[in-house]
Length: 353
Picture 1 (cartoon, rainbow, N blue to C red):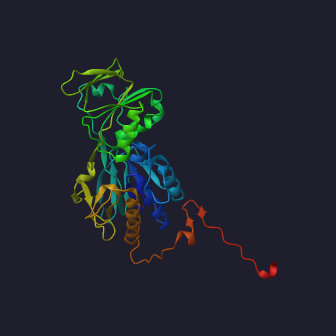
Picture 2 (tube, one colour):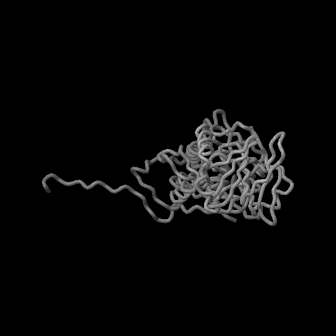
Picture 3 (spheres, rainbow, N blue to C red):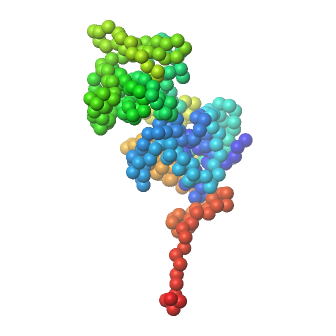
């Protein structure tokens, strides 16, 4: 049994920042995540993509944000159960909760913070009979390491931001990039659509619309794909990689069976106070919660995590008053004995000069 103060379900940016905010309150955290490494979608789906709306960082790669958050919380010695999915929660007679994973690992704490983002998710896949046979053999649903496509022929299918952005990025990496979309119109940011148009005119991207991928050809690996356009004969295009980027299909997974109030496929919370769910002691923060005016932004998750930790402190320490101290004044004392504090200014007496 792993015992802690706060069980955090989800090791994405919001979950990782919770470790720091809880640490300032002398609360220990243990994180559970189905992915094999911390970072959530930032490390699994787009570690090399820049994020532009993190306060204080005009631009930061998603993977670097994960590293920074891990470093920020390091001195509070969080525990991790990775590669396991939170399966069940049981409230105990003493008011604590036991969260058990799909592999039977048990965790006990008075507070549960669900920071699981979209929850369990899987890529939306094209309806191709031969698709499964080529998965990890030239068919990829996400781009983890762009360098693997260097000097390769790549076909990307999709019409959203991910398909547009990766087509732009790989134009300088791959031998050739072909973007296929079933419509002439794209659903991405205007800047990205215009950039793809520029690269097409410059001969750096082959754009095929409206069209669909209707077959994959290859002996043990992807060697070509079949493209079909309306009122035209299908044609073959040689390629080393086929990357369908149709987005993710979000699901709450087993958490949906925990008796929590669900609205719009997200966990309903009280945002006027502390982002607590209908079950006292269980909170939901980050992209997986819902309240009027909710914005699914990382910076909003950071805000929610901060207020949630204040409420968690009061539940764990009833009647004990917490006096907030700014880190610029009091510094940050870690559970590992480390201390981060600003250097004190040297004061000299005028007579000593």
